[in-house]
Length: 114
Image (tube, rainbow, N blue to C red):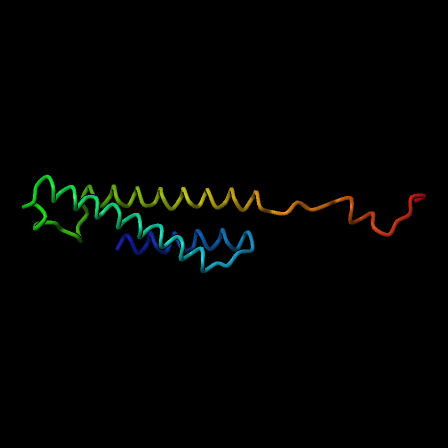
Protein backbone atom coordinates (compact mmCIF):
# COMPACT_ATOMS: atom_id res chain seq x y z
CA UNK A 1 0.00 0.00 0.00
CA UNK A 2 2.81 2.38 0.80
CA UNK A 3 4.32 1.70 -2.63
CA UNK A 4 1.15 3.00 -4.28
CA UNK A 5 1.45 6.30 -2.41
CA UNK A 6 5.13 6.52 -3.32
CA UNK A 7 4.28 5.88 -6.99
CA UNK A 8 1.60 8.57 -7.00
CA UNK A 9 3.99 11.04 -5.38
CA UNK A 10 6.79 10.22 -7.81
CA UNK A 11 4.46 10.59 -10.78
CA UNK A 12 3.26 14.01 -9.62
CA UNK A 13 6.81 15.11 -8.75
CA UNK A 14 8.09 14.31 -12.25
CA UNK A 15 4.97 15.71 -13.93
CA UNK A 16 5.52 19.04 -12.17
CA UNK A 17 9.13 19.05 -13.35
CA UNK A 18 8.04 18.40 -16.92
CA UNK A 19 5.38 21.10 -16.76
CA UNK A 20 7.87 23.64 -15.41
CA UNK A 21 10.18 23.10 -18.38
CA UNK A 22 7.51 22.65 -21.06
CA UNK A 23 7.91 18.90 -21.52
CA UNK A 24 5.26 16.17 -21.82
CA UNK A 25 4.00 15.51 -18.30
CA UNK A 26 2.77 11.94 -18.60
CA UNK A 27 6.00 10.68 -20.18
CA UNK A 28 8.08 11.87 -17.26
CA UNK A 29 5.50 10.57 -14.81
CA UNK A 30 5.74 7.13 -16.37
CA UNK A 31 9.54 7.44 -16.21
CA UNK A 32 9.28 8.01 -12.45
CA UNK A 33 7.08 4.93 -12.09
CA UNK A 34 9.54 2.89 -14.16
CA UNK A 35 12.51 4.02 -12.08
CA UNK A 36 10.74 3.18 -8.83
CA UNK A 37 9.46 -0.22 -9.96
CA UNK A 38 12.75 -1.10 -11.65
CA UNK A 39 14.69 -0.33 -8.50
CA UNK A 40 12.23 -2.35 -6.42
CA UNK A 41 12.50 -5.33 -8.79
CA UNK A 42 16.28 -5.16 -8.86
CA UNK A 43 16.49 -5.03 -5.08
CA UNK A 44 13.89 -7.80 -4.71
CA UNK A 45 15.69 -10.12 -7.11
CA UNK A 46 19.01 -9.35 -5.46
CA UNK A 47 17.63 -10.10 -2.00
CA UNK A 48 15.93 -13.28 -3.25
CA UNK A 49 19.14 -14.52 -4.84
CA UNK A 50 21.06 -13.70 -1.67
CA UNK A 51 18.57 -15.64 0.45
CA UNK A 52 18.56 -18.54 -2.00
CA UNK A 53 22.34 -18.81 -1.87
CA UNK A 54 22.80 -18.37 1.87
CA UNK A 55 19.75 -20.18 3.27
CA UNK A 56 17.65 -22.03 0.67
CA UNK A 57 15.00 -23.06 3.22
CA UNK A 58 14.19 -19.45 4.14
CA UNK A 59 13.01 -18.71 0.58
CA UNK A 60 9.82 -20.66 1.28
CA UNK A 61 8.89 -18.47 4.27
CA UNK A 62 9.17 -14.96 2.78
CA UNK A 63 6.35 -12.56 3.67
CA UNK A 64 5.79 -10.22 0.72
CA UNK A 65 3.10 -8.08 2.33
CA UNK A 66 4.54 -7.15 5.71
CA UNK A 67 6.67 -4.30 6.94
CA UNK A 68 10.12 -5.76 7.31
CA UNK A 69 13.48 -4.10 7.51
CA UNK A 70 14.26 -5.22 3.98
CA UNK A 71 11.04 -3.64 2.64
CA UNK A 72 11.75 -0.34 4.35
CA UNK A 73 15.34 -0.28 3.07
CA UNK A 74 14.05 -1.12 -0.43
CA UNK A 75 11.57 1.77 -0.30
CA UNK A 76 14.24 4.19 0.87
CA UNK A 77 16.72 3.12 -1.83
CA UNK A 78 14.01 3.38 -4.50
CA UNK A 79 13.00 6.85 -3.32
CA UNK A 80 16.63 7.97 -3.41
CA UNK A 81 16.96 6.58 -6.96
CA UNK A 82 13.83 8.47 -8.08
CA UNK A 83 15.10 11.67 -6.42
CA UNK A 84 18.58 11.26 -7.96
CA UNK A 85 17.22 10.92 -11.49
CA UNK A 86 14.89 13.88 -10.80
CA UNK A 87 17.85 16.09 -9.83
CA UNK A 88 19.79 14.89 -12.89
CA UNK A 89 16.89 15.77 -15.20
CA UNK A 90 16.33 19.11 -13.49
CA UNK A 91 19.97 20.11 -13.98
CA UNK A 92 19.84 18.90 -17.58
CA UNK A 93 16.71 20.96 -18.29
CA UNK A 94 18.22 24.05 -16.69
CA UNK A 95 21.30 23.74 -18.91
CA UNK A 96 19.14 23.20 -22.02
CA UNK A 97 17.00 26.27 -21.35
CA UNK A 98 17.58 28.77 -24.14
CA UNK A 99 19.17 32.04 -23.14
CA UNK A 100 17.09 35.05 -24.15
CA UNK A 101 18.89 37.65 -26.22
CA UNK A 102 17.93 40.81 -24.34
CA UNK A 103 19.52 43.63 -26.31
CA UNK A 104 19.49 42.22 -29.82
CA UNK A 105 15.71 41.98 -30.21
CA UNK A 106 15.11 45.48 -28.88
CA UNK A 107 17.68 46.96 -31.26
CA UNK A 108 16.05 45.60 -34.43
CA UNK A 109 14.83 48.39 -36.69
CA UNK A 110 16.68 51.20 -34.92
CA UNK A 111 19.23 53.24 -36.77
CA UNK A 112 22.69 53.99 -35.49
CA UNK A 113 21.91 57.71 -34.94
CA UNK A 114 19.17 57.06 -32.37
